[in-house]
Length: 130
Image (cartoon, rainbow, N blue to C red; front, side, top):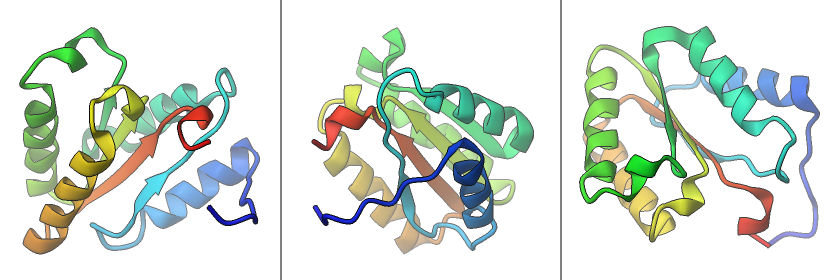
């Protein structure tokens, strides 16, 4: 990992996210990290409400995330939203999903290959990348 750290305050993070969501989708996967209890989930839920039908919030620590069909259901719904126009998938606590990095990369590659207009925002806890 590079030594330089890119940090933003709460409002700066919100502004940058909204700015990047104006880019054509799929653009980049945005992986935002931070320690526990700093407002990551609150930020995601606020953005989900603000962005309306285009936004989908998913929590990797939800009890349903352990079900065998969870991953497939998330992507089926996300792609259905993207079929109605550009969409956003906010994936909170993604580190709770087994093999999430490989799975996410595979889905992202598929989105790019098929030109599905879906933005990906993933928010693991800060200790995941340490």
